[in-house]
Length: 280
Length: 313
Image 1: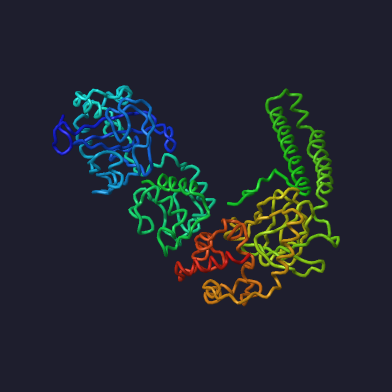
Image 2: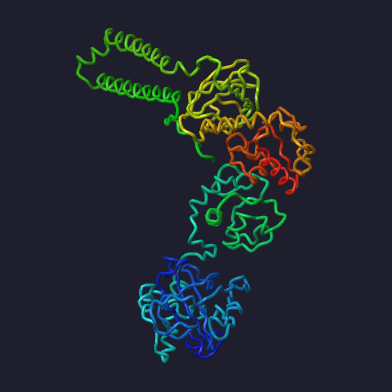
């Protein structure tokens, strides 16, 4: 139990700072699990949307932590509640096996955040969480209670670890929903369908859920959720898809798909619709 | 699709449509009343008192309810209806704006006429009118019977081969009004839409002037890929662009394609993407329409053609 990732001793500590809606400008009202991970003296921030169990998603934007920290991280005082500092500068997701196994803070920002800037593996958490499956029935409610009070006593490494595992369990092991790495919480897939019709996407593409038109000049857009590449070149990620829908030639020069007269918000909605409508 | 589509049927936006809409509501009210009376009578005939049943089955009831009532009511309705809508087909007085609209399989040929009935400029699938002014449409057909219907602006009138039917339309507020072919005309009849754009009078006058001038203007030679492809790929055999060598008359006039609201006769938004999708394979979008698919064109060529058409304003 006390051994951390990679069979290390209890120095590998995970402390969940907060499990409640994160109040920040960009991600207002979203239920996200914020975590600070400390390992061998290095600390990293991570953010994990609920229902997103397979990896700690790194946001490509500054985030604010509004909770009590158990220790000092990059200028945030321990024990200070509801402090909204930008602790994580843009963090680059790094693809490992299957694209989601590992994540690390970009070296450029590592020292801003903590001392090390070394990669942390998601797998340690995962193993611990798996070992804690027996606590599943305790559910989210208990975990949330524990999260409100930050852990300030450094002696309680074991306690922290168990707590962390409990808190993470609801999203890792107990949540019955299938993993959805195409989640676009800010987009409206319902609007997306109307916008796709209004923009005339169907003139070139057969789109699930849109009976007419079903053009043949472009590829059919079914099963986009599972598609590997966009435009034959780009990784299939929500942000990339939304950008490609709006202005394909700037991302894939020479593509047959022209820039479309839609706003970024409309493109985002359409992307959300494609992920949702085409899922098999 | 575009603003004003699908067109609401009971939302008149001009005097002619008001008349049609009023008549529609009166018909509905009468139909409901008659239905209620018939159902009530039927109920009485089945379950009423014996004396009532005898009355309903008597000769007097049949004369009154079966002959006199319909004769009076329907005659009155006919006279009222014809009076109400008599201005819809008023003959040409001489100074109205005249537009000839020809139904084709499955699109609309549009020509704006001068007082002598000569075409000032050509367009397709879209009609521009000034607000607050009656416009006389000369409705014709090139092949089968079509029916011109813009519900918010006027009634519905058939386009019959060999005939010229007049119908007036008027819009009281600026905007875009959807229309639709209302008589089955074969294959993609359902995909034969139309857009009417009502402009403020000053704006409309400027548009008319600019387009009439464009009709006769000398167009400098265009060396762009799109212009060359338009000739080489065969587009020009069926489509016309005023002032160029493209003078085909089988398909819609494309002189003002870039400024049109819709593509494919009121069915698709008009942008570069839909243009490419249409040129590449319009058969997938509007099955059996008379434009062949151009599957031999590359992405670059499709794009060049779309850019060229976008520039035709």
